[in-house]
Length: 451
Image 1: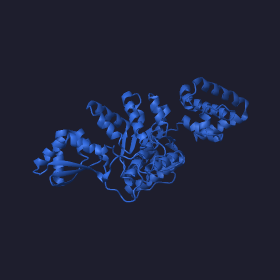
Image 2: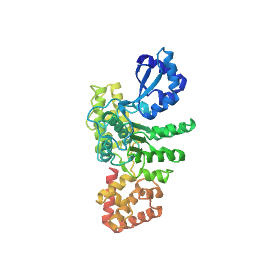
Image 3: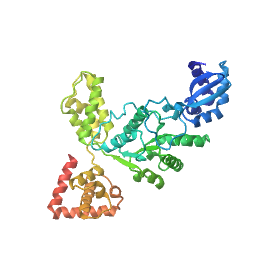
Image 4: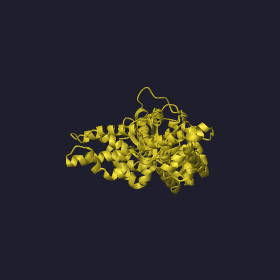
């Protein structure tokens, strides 16, 4: 029995058992040897070996005998002699461990090879998220669980999730890491319900060392999926297994998410990836120029172009990177230097769409920095004047410099009622006439936000 024959045999099994069963149970099997009538296979977990033995052993034996192989029974061994799961993440081994379950065995979602820690540009808005992700990627004892990363579109959440998965695969191959989106989690849950294989679903998801779920806001409003996610979460936390979650907003702000799920998500480290600042955007562009220069040798970029792009395209890193890619491609086709004229001609639509949009979060940060107070105090419940006045100024600026409604502004200021926002706006309108310092502060803040 050769590996080539085992590959042919697997194709026949695929036709017999179907794609889903094949991907989950047959594909992870690694043929080891056939000796004394015993066919030995490596499996990722004891559970998988037991399940295949009970449900597919006769079929595999039949196909093996079809190849004229003298085989009487099957034997399944866990790769790297990995037995019972420890209750804590094991210490990093001194020697390189034997190969264990490949990511495909757990149906991990595809990882983008570009998204590594080396390619992640760190700046003030994302340095805490980056540091927390690096700590988790070390694979040591769990220190904060779960790690919850949240932020707007294109700020690096998925990049950090993929970077953690890549790092763990490289440095801790002894750990089973499962990365998938919340939508994929829901799909697998529904599929398990339909096929009446919930025990298989539970065993797979509750026997991983690291579970990573991207865009968890997508399970909001889906009661059955939230129920299963809740129990999976609890089972893993009880065993000190690491959980890493990402979303587009903080747990408490995800609409239609059950309170008990919100509570669990908030019990670990919750990290906000802030909108990028000018310095970070410029750093990202400089990093991407180095990559693009390898693809387009000989192309030059004029001074001031990167600074112009970093200033004008401020909302989304993906748009920023896409604009640079388009510039290099266009300049290569027309055989010109990337100067300011070419940039404005090539990116006219992007520049129009990326006109400066001021956010409530940006206003809050600017005001808290201006008055030298913590952001959490300004939006928190404290009513001291040293916090209340900056809070009212931030509400006033949010009302006049954004298109957000009063109720939404109130929610961004610690869940306050819209009448509180109205009172704060009226109070600042009165004070800016009476108090020259308030008027001066408002003008300075407005200029800084519009810069």
